[in-house]
Length: 437
Image 1 (cartoon, helix red, strand yellow):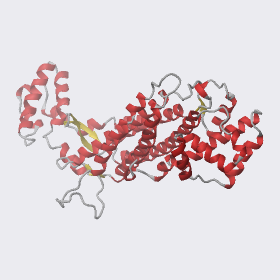
Image 2 (spheres, one colour; image 1 turned 135 degrees about the vertical axis):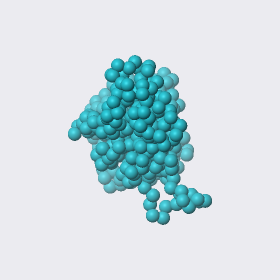
Image 3 (cartoon, one colour; image 1 turned 90 degrees about the vertical axis):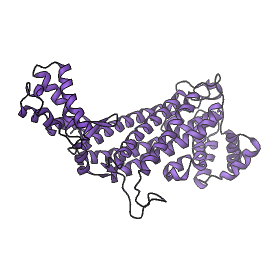
Image 4 (cartoon, helix red, strand yellow; image 1 turned 30 degrees about the horizontal axis):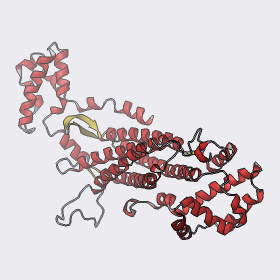
């Protein structure tokens, strides 16, 4: 975790104090259930909660000092609690194993982290939607292979992003459901020393589902899918960031990141206004994606349990969620303040002498009885003249001067094929599909 790319609410979920508080809740709720089953005295559970009510602070340094001796974090925590609670603490952790605490805690932390990420997505979607409707009918050139293709609108670019991040939200909701499971099943997951009712009680208290079958650890296919989902969201972030970066290039300059008063773009060149935020997002997306692979490699553990996954998750769980949280917030800011230049879009749209309308002429010729092969040849030979003139020539005028073309199409029919509005006639339909309005 790097503070430069972190926001405090997400960081708090992963700090040591939060983790130990969740551990305490797991142990105390389990002790409650054990007391109800008559396995431990009810006074034991009461002692835990009474102490917690008056001492809701965690001495992280003291626990770390104990762990330096025990070389076991859960034992160090239990020892510290016992030192503070007293004799009744001996009934804590009855029939449980450390994985019950660690895995259930991780489920709680990932669930809380996901709630923040879902809120981030809602904010991003709101910003994209606002810009989509603002520029619903702002014409711009569509590009394929980076080359001018046919007209679109800037609003359609935003609508496309909205639909993509809506899918991201749906996937994240599903991933949260998949990851939010509780396992309090004891050694090798057989419940031999702890009643399944304890697991049910703890799960209900923590807002989790029970793990149907654990092998002392919660199956890591759940975690693999979760981190893969974060990786897909990161890829969607990068896709929109790359679009902004391309639109900000000097030769294009149809949109650019907001450049604040006093901001500097280069230590050497005072004129520079660089797309640093979206370039940063591309880098952060690479990091979030990188965490998906080790999560997948964690699926194959030895038999009922090993701890090869543990060190991995101590890295990737906080880092992936903290980084994605920051990236979503940054992208929201970029879109919210994005400078959009419709005049430059119009200039670029008209830059190549009407070449963007070539398909309409091609189709008109075929409908007028010319073979597709000949239609393509006729349009292309005129289009290449325009291309080689760098847009100084007009495709429409060249076509009207081409006797083979005018043998099939009148000058008026040719002119009709250069109507920009034709390309935008279904924008409302697309918006209705995306936004329902």
